[in-house]
Amino acid sequence: MKERYPLPCNIAQTLNIVGDRWTLLIIHEILVGNTTFNDIKHNLETISANLLSTRLKALEQQGMVVSELYSKHPPRYQYALTEKSRDFEPVFHALLLWGREHLDTCYKALINSETGNDVEIGYYDQKNR
Image 1 (cartoon, rainbow, N blue to C red):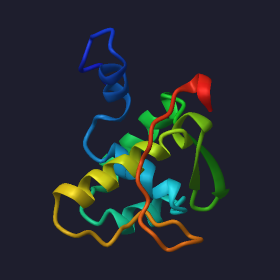
Image 2: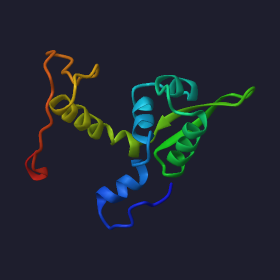
Image 3: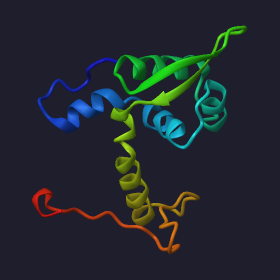
Image 4: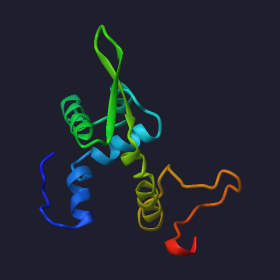
């Protein structure tokens, strides 16, 4: 991926990896279990196959996803997130919660599976866990 933000800032450096159009949505699709090219393409209806392929290759180069051949004829791959990209899950939660407060109602929600209540993000001091 092209480095668009040549700044010594964690936000800029992160955007250099995931800031391209569709990239976050591709990572999210794999995170929720859509691991094949066709599954991802089906759920991101308007992305072109060429662009999806380009983004997946770039994510592999950045160490965000790994691919595994699951069919030789024709060659087909499934994708898995690395620990580096699985650590991105709280970012998706934050985007979802921000959208819940500031955008139209969405079909996605962040719910406590035990209580059924909406979840909020909290911050804590690392030394006082």
